[in-house]
Amino acid sequence: MKFFRLFLFIVLTVTLFMPSPADASSSSNFKLGLGYDLDGGITAQYRGYSFFINGDALAIDWRLENFTNDKKSLHVYIDLGGFIENYDGNDSTRDDRVGLRAPVGITLGITRELQAYIQAVPNYDFNNDEGFEVDGAIGIRYRF
Image (cartoon, rainbow, N blue to C red):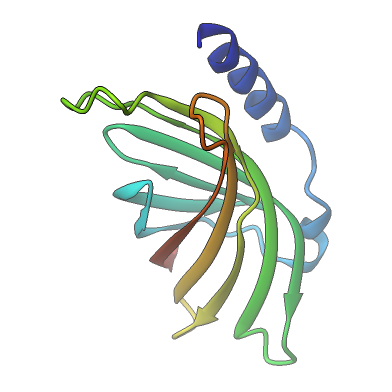
């Protein structure tokens, strides 16, 4: 367990400093909002990276590809990243989760500053017997 957390931390840290190939086609403005991904929490986006954090979880995704319409109000994207989720409940069949994920989603520009997103999140959990799962996420972000 500790090895996987250390490994995932190193991989996520290294990817933060890698330039995103989608940077050329997307703006580098900071966006912040609320979302439901690994439970309810705060979502942010900056320079091709998406972040999600709450009291028990952290996810960081790197934008691999970004497709837009002519008006740039609709984006379809593919990300690659990782997650860590801490479980402190009473269910003995559940454990902490650490894994890789590849969100595929749609972002809709409601106004110039406000956008909503929905995504399917295929992921591989190193700590569970199930391994591969597909989760979902939804949220809204404001561009500063």
